[in-house]
Image 1 (spheres, rainbow, N blue to C red):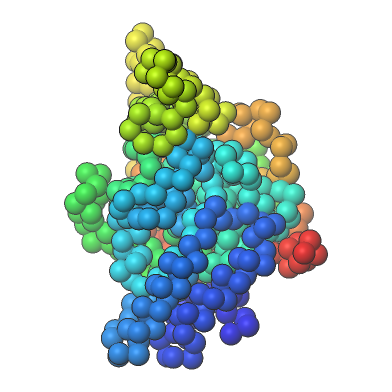
Image 2: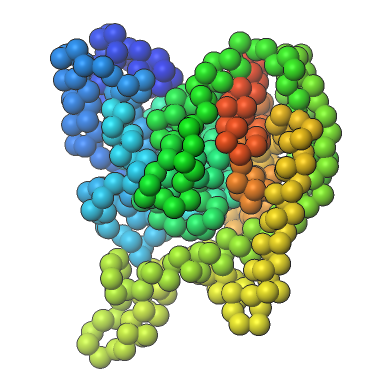
Length: 497
């Protein structure tokens, strides 16, 4: 049991199912790990100790009665703080929602509870999921377990860091422009963005409604697939949910782990050929491609000419939708209220509340989005960006007529030091250069560790057609079987104790 925090989710589930370990013992071990290291990592905003132990006891009772357990029953999971959890604080890492406890669970949380997973708590993030480094949390940044002076990626840096620090074997993130994959890449973990509509957005605090996608985070591809299979599927409460069966992602991951990619065509996007990427990142990517070729894959260069416009298109579409979605935080219905002394008008209270409750990046995006949607500018900015989105979708469609999946680095660079990009928003936005096109298209993508550069992890991205999530899992698992997994040096945590 002393090593249970280092085990995969599949291994932990096996121990619990066989009776070699109890769910309470597993939960207690992970809560102890959080106590030991999270003061330095700051992956969690809230630890639900009582709720976790209660859920674990329920699993143990079910097993003692001989009831059938799900494939992840008793396995701990951390949940990004942008997802509603009944009775558990959900703040989106913003002061404007400080202390808010939702009266309901998000659909994916319902499914997690139904599967018998044990929710440890809520993880840190960039405020309202707006950021690429988790430096924009109103409650302080999360530190990368590989190097506590570097960012863990964003916006879901807390979820990824909890995995890399062995505080949780599984985590839930959300991906609007790369916020699952990018943190996975810089923390040496696995992060998967399902097909848009493949996982329910009901109960997810909205940032950009046409882009937001909840998804699994894990330390291995198989674990990510197991979690994906639990949370995915049609939801009548989400109008964008796809009424279609979820591909067998678990079987695909296990097939890929055999290391046979015979007949699989991989497309390298010509427009992603090293633009803006660090040499060490490209070297690890090329070595990984060679490893996949040795497993039988064929590599084809494809052109997606409109990918170069993805970044500017995204930073018009996403802020525009954020401007609309965040209008609900007005200091009237719920959340923070500032200046309501009986003498101020509603407009004054609303202005004071938003000034105090929203951080700088959220304000920046609201202003940008409001401008793009304003009279006289809608067609010139937001309308044009949506046309570019259509062209990017056509690029993907054409590419997938030639290949099974597309591949690229996940991020152009490894984890950077805190504060090194906050003064230049554009340099921060470049962190999502390779991930954004998939969100605009709506297809699935996964980041899997593929090597190290300057002692820090590098991510390898696999993109697939919509509702072909199984393809990306197969290729990702094959790469994992060839290059192995990567663990942070324990000294980065223990030496600071």
